[in-house]
Length: 590
Image 1 (cartoon, rainbow, N blue to C red):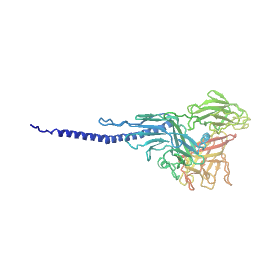
Image 2 (cartoon, helix red, strand yellow):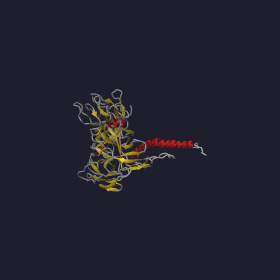
Image 3 (cartoon, helix red, strand yellow):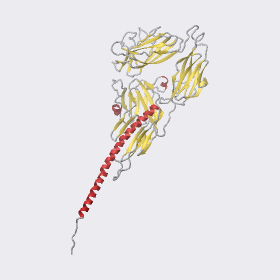
Image 4 (cartoon, rainbow, N blue to C red):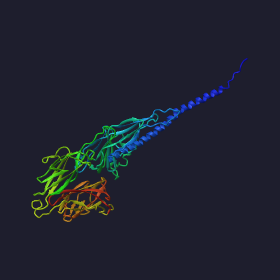
């Protein structure tokens, strides 16, 4: 007997196999296409997060430089993929954060910048270079192709792609008439899929700001960078660029590529700039700073009466213009045969050595003089951070590591004290600004382009003003020029209304600013300039006519309301002493 074949179960088995095959194909497709797409999104979002955290690090570098207080920023070098039960993830992506060299020599330079006073011994127009480094983050993703390397350099945060560069956060080097450079030092290199905490340290915090202006040629900043001059001009410095000199709030007149170097040169318009420098460290191998120059804080070019003292304050700074704590200072007195001496924390003598600066980088000492006979004298207090200054002979006080205080010492009456029997009895005083500066529309043309202010002679003796220096803070104000062909108040560039004798200075064609007006110089063939004379305790009124801004043959009147002007007055007292006072005036509206 033959049995029949039963094939009913074959269809179920084939269906099961086909369903399993479809499931395998779907799972394989998901693994091959969907998982990478989702992981790519994870990597992309992580890259955006890193860029945000690098902006925080950039801000932390500048905050540390400004406040001298360290903080930290956490950078997620890598990330994690979501957990998948049925699918396989590649290893967690990682990234590398490291310090890098910048440009050809990794140095920022400042050229043609000149300061005033003792600071000019250092900032004398020569080229000053400052080494710096950058930071770069390079991701190691599995899926996200062509992810950028994110770079921090000279305050700028940008993405470097294979074919382009895009700015993430702009520059802080030039903001109006403020120049702010934060250099980076140290070595850092870390590769990981975890987060890295970066803690910047302040090596030289920008606690001091100095005023500089051009030495003749414009101030130039040379910045090592792989970004083009066009990107700097059109993107990074867009709000600061003023190639036509028509924007009073913009000061960059040119941006140039440096031939043969990965660097750009930023050329600034003539004017006064506030310069802030700082150095911060990241990672290891951070170098410190050393004393670089010395400057006076108070006491120079002052008068001292017999049987009295005068406070002298010295400040030692590093090459970033910031004070150095614990720096060694030596001081010597050039006495000129007077019964005088120097005092510092219990030490007394004509020479003080190994005096240390305090937490502000300063040394405060006192010069003391007893009663003496004879003429008034000039004495010197020599200061050096290099050697012990001599008490006589030559001394290079123009060197940046040296400083000389010049004091006028006088008697207080009686025969032989330089004043003559029965002569005036001088007491310490000065020229005091009465804080009454006002902008004046002196020619009734609608613009308050002139300035009037007053000073008081606080000495009890007569003084004669010999020189007046005028320097507006805003660099766009470039000339002081009266429109009149006559001489007098509101007809000359400078007129001083004084009680004993008025003063006048009239300059043919006007004076380019900043300017120094010699009150005795003969400008016109018919009318000489006149030195104003003030009796003791009297007040004199200065009239400055008028301030102009802009270049070319058609400068415009400058509205002086709210403008700040430095006025440096040199005068001669009746006893022969010559003094200088520097006033800062801010004109209000009339």
